[in-house]
Image 1 (cartoon, rainbow, N blue to C red):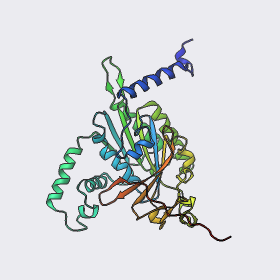
Image 2: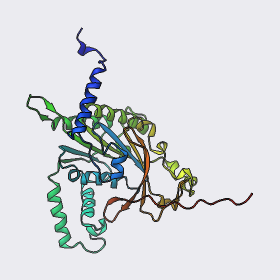
Image 3: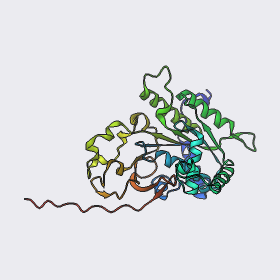
Image 4: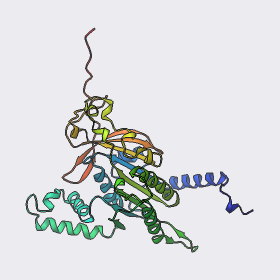
Amino acid sequence: MNDNNLPWKNQREAYRESLKYLKGRMDGDIRSLKTPWSKFNDASTDGLEWHSMTVVGGRPGAGKTLLKDQIIRESFKLNPNENFRVLEFQLEMVGRTAAIRQYSSVIGRSYKYLCSAEGKLSMDDLKRCAEYARQKVQDPIDLIEEPPTTKDFKDIVTKYMNAHAEKTEDDKYKYVNTVITLDHSLLLKKASYERDKFEMLYNFGEACTELKRKFPIAFIILSQLNRNIDSPDRAEEGKIGNYILSSDIMGADALLQHADLLIGINRPGLMKIRFYGPDRYIIEDDNVLVMHFLKCRNGDTRMSFFKAEFHKMQIAEMTTPPQQEKRINTYK
């Protein structure tokens, strides 16, 4: 019988592949995609691994798109020796808006200013935007703006990977490492055979796992949180309910098992929380972001603090804030 027709393989192949991977990592021939933040890289395997899926969940305005945009914007500069492409499913905003947000990060002025809605945009700043655009169009980034069904998504990704495969010296084809982003999961179209959005998310999670096993892809999937995150008891200062849990991610049951990295982003100041969680971290203003690394398949779960600089459309690392002294009950 032809062994190629058997649905199993001997474990020796897995060991052979693992040792080859370790040697490649040791020699620096295989690397993760570094992100702009050392805290993020440290929580993961020194960045985003290929053949992986990262899910980022948060309230509207928490900084999900900001995080995704900054990773993509700085990826080519931070990983100069890597050969990779980017395919973005920009379903929430048009490409023009995303580009203007990038200009904002580069020249350090607000989106409103760039649109002459906060003082008139100067000719010098317009020229700076144009120069940035001339540089960035050289990066291999492609966009999809029409919402696909899960099946269409799978077909598009497969076609994209095949279209950019590189021919090797022995006349074989090698797939190019590719970052694929989706902003965000609920904006996918529900197919006629899917009962609801939750069934769609289950199908989507399975499709991503199948794709990341076959191709060297690093998925970045943005998601909303369930509505119970906004219940009044979750906003009581100093409570465990302040923290984002994996069950808070929209479609958590559908996406959690497929995610290699699951991150919940919180912005406590928006909920008027000044002492965050049972550790009572002092939240100094509305721009403090908390990233809860809820699942790190090949890293470490943790909680890290960042600062959202919305006027620059970027996120910066910050030191862990001090904790409020815990009150001691002196009553007997």
